[in-house]
Image (cartoon, rainbow, N blue to C red):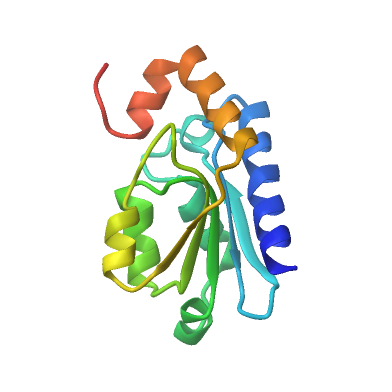
Length: 150
């Protein structure tokens, strides 16, 4: 099933990011026919990047795609997408965004909906626990990631 493939890939990516000492957020872009087009995880800390969030990494790893491919695709992400990642999904007219959890952070869900993107919240305890642990252990890194001051 498409949702299992996409969510499983995103969660694997989040765990990889955590193991690397980074922000434990993963994402996967899945085509309308259920194939993973690209997957990635937040690598801001690992690569010293200002923009390499999970969704951006997944889009980058998907490479250049025809506009129609994005329009039928689903972005799976372990955490509610920030404004930057929301904007990327809107710009490429991604059809649906499936979010692992939105308790530790709520991003641009309302804006996605306003733009006609279907938003699904999975309420994953595993995703929430990964984020809670990271935020507790590395509050400075978390706040930097979302553009906030402590």
